[in-house]
Image 1: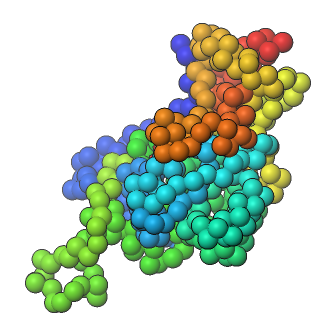
Image 2: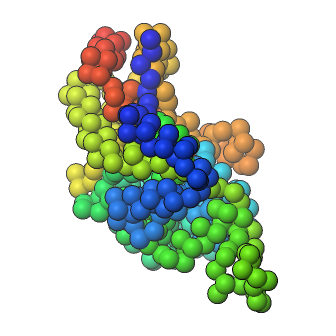
Image 3: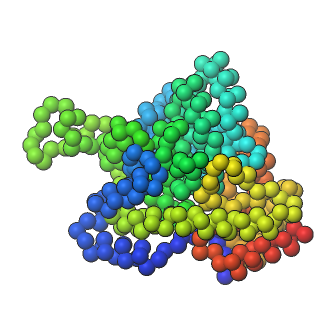
Length: 383
Ligand SMILES: *Cc1c(COP(=O)(O)O)cnc(C)c1O
């Protein structure tokens, strides 16, 4: 039996919710999608939420809604899943990265400021910057938001790890320092819809545009029509969109999961506190959590002081039935990105972090006995 690094927690309420949708009139996008979107706005404080079939889709329509396209530039974090950068390329824009801070593993606001100063001199400022709340730990959004005002770029938070996280009293998704925040509902994330994602925003026009983009660029809003409606059956396609809709099955699962969000994040904090205490004297570093913020704790990463030991320790943990993982191989070192001109050495902090990183099991249903086994196994390996 392997203890996974992440796993969904599905209760009877979730099962009943999905079964009742199966017996209802709607199974594709219908009333449950709106209920789920309302649960997201209620929890995050966002004005609007647009639910779609994945976070990748949500990031894509967020970029499209901000007019990211050919001749435009997206900056994101190299310490992320490839989707964060891919969506910029899918829009036809160029992509670049801003290195991470060595202690938070998040996009470094000082490096961002320095890169912006230099980009302004070259006349090559980004159009959109996408910080990633790595592991659920909020990026320094007040600093990034201030830079956005000064340099005139838009901000999309890749909050795939961070539903339930907050900065001060503001939940991630409240978008106080950004245009759009995107959540993932993949089973290893904080709450799940099996596959799914959502984009939160306070801007009604951006929300309306993302609602259109998730469904082919088609509208039934007659005030947006060119010319008169053909009849009561009318719809018009007014821009190019996709089919990124979320189903009723997924949404009903999401509604039931959102009721457990706070309980899930609480449990993750309790588990993290046990890891923190157990590892205090081991030769490793953990992600620094900012005092004024609350992480959603999607991941619990240990960064071994001696990167040469990462592979043997990883392999020994796997052999012992501890399903560790690594987050993330720096995006710019992937073959596809190297073919586009990036090279090993471009973002040294992300690379140095990656070299020592191991993600340990962290999910609400992780039993303390199993966590104790993870702790004792890692402790004896590093002793
Ligand atoms: C999981 C993840 C995504 C993609 O989410 P999907 O819902 O699987 O499309 C994007 N960015 C980050 C940082 C992620 O962890």
